[in-house]
Every structure is written in C-alpha cells, then in structure tokens.
Image 1 (cartoon, rainbow, N blue to C red):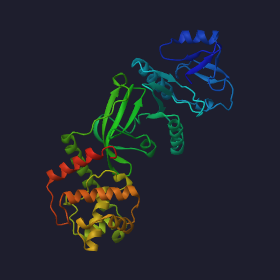
Image 2: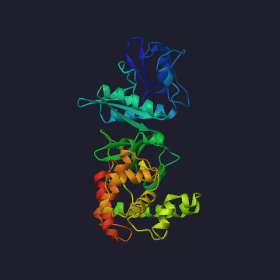
Image 3: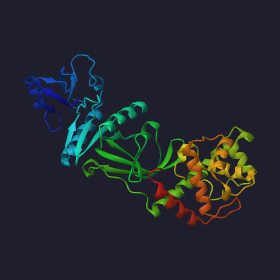
Image 4: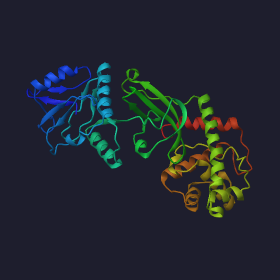
Length: 378
C-alpha cells in the first residue's frame, strides 16, 4: 500500500520524490491508518522494496490481502501515478470504492469520464478478471488493465514470433479497430505494445513489438498503427516461412497415419507438400478459434467439397457447419465466421477448386484489405 490516512484524517501518499530521511522522521512523528478498515498501519522503509504501508496485525481488511505486493508492482503503480501527474491528468492512487469493495491501483477523472488503471503483476483468474470489470462497468468506470511486460518471452522490437499465454491474452484490448496488448516494465520505465496480432497456431502469433518510454506516453493511451502495405507484405513472407516449417514437422511427427485427416486430405487432393497452392495456408482473421495452423482446416475444407462434388461458389453456412462437424473441429459461431471469411476470400479470388490459379499480387492485396477491415478482431 502506498496510501494511508493520518491522525488528522489527511490522505498521505508515498511517492519517489519524498527522501527516506523525511519518511523516517514522519514515521516517528505521525500515526497512519488504513483508508479502508481504519486499523493502524506501519510505514516500512527498507533498502530493497520501495517504502510502503502494511497492516500491523492480521484482519479481514481486503487491503491486507494485497500487501504481498512485489517490488515491481509497487514501483510500477507509483511510476504510473507520477506519469499522470506529469501529464496533469487528475489521478488518485489506491482509492477505495466502497460500493464495489474494490481498490484500483489508480483512478482517473478526465472530461467527465472515469478510468480505473490496474497494473497487473501476478496471475489473475479469468472469473475474477470479469468480476472486477463488471463492478467497474456498473459504476460507469472504464477499466484499463496493464500487465507486467513478460521480459523472458519478448525481446527487441519490430516483427517477431511470440507466444501469448492465455493469462496475457485476457488483457488484449480492441479500440478504434486496433487489437493490441499494452504492457509495462517498471525496471526499464517503458511500455511495450504487442500489436497487429496474426495467429499462427496454439498460442503463437506474429506481432509487431513497439517499445514506448514512460514519459513519451500520453492519455488517453497511445493506440498502435496497423501495418503498412509494405510491412504487411513482409508479414506474409514470414507467415509463409512459418507454414513451410510447419509442414515439414507436421509430416515427420504425425503418428495417426491414414487417420490424420489433414495428411489424408493432402494425399487425396494430390498436393505436393513443397508446392501448396498459395490460397491454402493463409492468415484469416479469428483463426485462433481453431487453435491449429490455418493450412490444416483450409486444406480439409477443400477435401470436403471435393468429396461432396461441389465448387467453392456453392459453399454456404449449412455446408460450413457440415464441414466443421465432419472434420471434428469446433462448431462455434466464431469458427463458422472464420470459415465463411475464408470462403468469401476464395470467391473474390475466383477460386473454385484445387485446379484454380491465383496471382500472388491479387492475394496480397485482398488479404491486406481484409486485415485493415478486421484488424480489431485479428
């Protein structure tokens, strides 16, 4: 805790501008109490952790259960607090919202709107995440979650392949057609934007990584830009390289043999593993609904219509649903939408079957157009 109430009922905030000597003197002269439960607090001033308040005795105060804060959490929310003061944005540190029994790290009041800033350094269950968001929304407070930058998983900047655990994925936000994750690292004092996410398989993505120094940030927070057309062309090249590597390992490590629907589809359609048609294995918005590489279900779809004896132009929602059940893929509204998006793209490319040919330039143009139209959902 960085906030306490004095014996004079004054709100006292610890920040990095107060010297340790001053804090030590105040510790001897003043009494500090919990803003939430009213119990007496002790002011801890160590050499490792930043100065902070803690309950003297165990009680049922909800603030007590958040006192196991890490150094990074204490530093991070204090740095964010100083950022908003620097930006001259009205901000409260650790305010207690009695009606919700919730205490955001920061609460901003700006132009008639309220924003709860949560700097999340520890894992949080998705149910608890939704519960806190619902509480804020009931009070017309917009929650903004800023997870700690996963230092060990993301290096450098620019386009790179990353893994995003589901714990981090829940913090992905969509705003102004932009889907991105904004993290913060108190050690380097910089934000890290993970944007323009394109699903590869499982929890692997291609993404644009952009660092932003603390004092270069603004509020409302900066929203990353989409790939330019040239950047997107480079992304497609990286995506194709991933597909090629995936195909090699997919064939080598498959243990299902003839029961492997993807490999059977490849065999029955007489596809050369090293010369797949360029309209198979392309990034489609929402592909994470399948949790698998796009080339798998896209190839299986072409095999399915081959068995039915129909062309691409005859594919409708009923055919899509039948395909998902036949291939034993998830049959959710999201999955149906992804397949339909792919089918519409094939129709725009005039693809009817495996004998169709497509120009690379035309495919890239249509994919980029789809990317811009749906990047809030990519």
